[in-house]
Amino acid sequence: MQQHVNSASFRRFTSARTVNPSILDPIPEDAGPRITTFRGGAIHSVRQPGSQVFLSDSHFLAVMLAPSPGITSAFASDKPQTFDAPLGMIVVSPAFTDSRTTWSHKRENAVVAIRPDSLMELAGQEFDMGSPDLQPPPFGTVDLPALHLAQMLKAELTRDEPPNDLLVDSLVTLFGVHILRNYTASAKAPGRVKGGLPVVSARRVQEYLKENFARKLSVSELAATCNLSPGHFIQAFTKTFGEPPHKYLVNLRLSFAEKLLVETEMTIAEAAYLSGFSSQSHLTSAMRRYKRITPARLKG
Image (cartoon, rainbow, N blue to C red; front, top):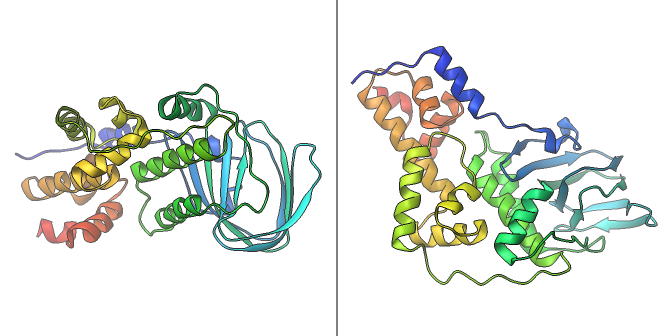
């Protein structure tokens, strides 16, 4: 059956996919590629020598992706400290806490922003605690698990194609869980997921994904279908389906795009938007990466 999509449909669809980027405004636009998610946002930041006075109504976390000597920094009225930042150093900047930093060499880091209400939600879901009291570690603290997450963020944000929304939201969520577990006054480790999703929950989230794959989805939204916390959901979903939620979602979108391209007279751009991709080039790069074929070859 032939299908047609008009320009008004495109405008409604792209408008629904737009997210307010204001949470990342404290970091200059030219610092590097960024993306906002349902839980917060992330940036791969590369900045030349300079200085900044920083204050935000969101929590900010930064992990050094390369060593950077000669940094001077201080929170609020604390005495400034000068140090050499090693690879993997983490900085936790609580919301509404001002800081001052000067750096004498180029610095590269991954920056994650999380809204206080979103972190509080995670604290309740993962740790059964109230409002979390963040306790920034001393300058120079190396956090290898955080570095691993930061390197995954960099890889996603610096690819040629647009970053995967659900993957970045998953990483921001895991960052939040990590911070709550390690840098709060009353953190307690959550119980580990021993198995995958129950059969009923697996079927429920599968159906939910099939019905909603073409729009932006957050980890929290998917976790709610299974009555799990976001952190536990990511682990259980991956154990059940053999791949993380973001990859499962990409494959659903690709399968639908293939169907539209083969069975209808839609253009590649139309099929891309209706399948949940941001553009024709985004669909092309994803199909080449995961299916080893291009939309143009499918159209024949």
